[in-house]
Image (tube, rainbow, N blue to C red; front, side, top):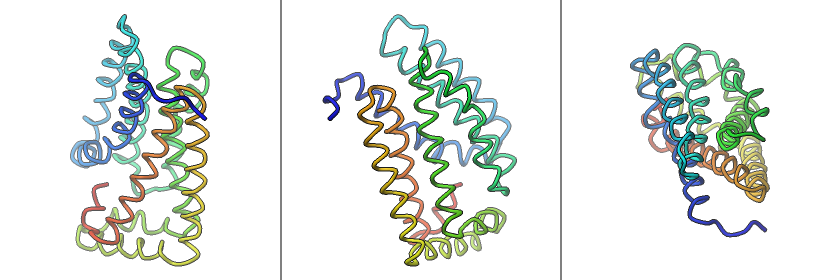
Length: 223
């Protein structure tokens, strides 16, 4: 069993969870309005992260590393949702553009940022795999290309598809595996806890989107 969280690790875990939700409320509408400026904002995130990482305070160093890792996810999200959103098969390859760097950096100065990026990427991969396994992939471009009212109906249909027994079994099994993996990561030290927080928060966000698709499909059109 992992030891109790101290004040500093708790800040990192909470920060990781908040950074996973930030694209839903800030990046998604921003990319829709101006994908170029959202993409350029990556440079601001990296600059702030590097400045914090150079601080003599360990806590700021950790947050700086975390922010640089988040910048990688932000850039990938801006590129995909800005220019390739109608091509779901491109989603994971674009999101994984920094995978070699993240793996190589796990033992170095930027390990917390690498852990965050990898946890987020794993959550994205699991989500895309579940969408493909439940036969929902065709709904993706249809909903994004449709008018707002029609998109809501498409998303609601996709949500109802998830409630079919076979799809529900796939989703429940995937969620259970991710929770077990999150627990395992949590016991692997500071980097593992950051990755665990990113992964488990991604799972929670997916659940919120499913509920929105079923109960308020217009809201699930945030993306």
